Image (tube, rainbow, N blue to C red; front, side, top):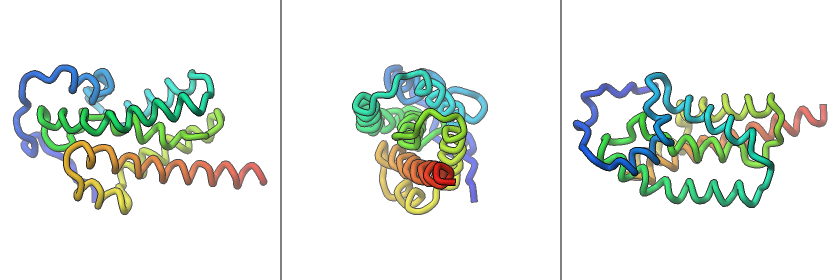
Length: 165
């Protein structure tokens, strides 16, 4: 069951923290009034489509975003409360995991996108457990990494099945 957060579930926002808010919201994308997680994932997919294929650079950027995302999202929670929808740096990392080594094929990318958003929303085990057990930035980031791994596996399975068919 999907739980919808009500504005009353979070403490009132604190002032300050412009840098943490900017980075955790993926430069303001997280302020989208409609589905900020989906909008941020779409932005990531579009941006990466236009970046030349270089696995080493891609992995380095993914590692930096993931590692930096832990304290960034943790600090942003101090201003907005527990895992608010404005924090989308976790979707950025999860989207990048979903696209790891996926060839630039529009159909595979659509599968990766839909799979990632679906797995992120559904929070299949162990994502839900991770989100509950880990506090702060760890919980914010890791459940999306798990969703990204699920999408990665599904996308590559589809790629393998239809390559041979």
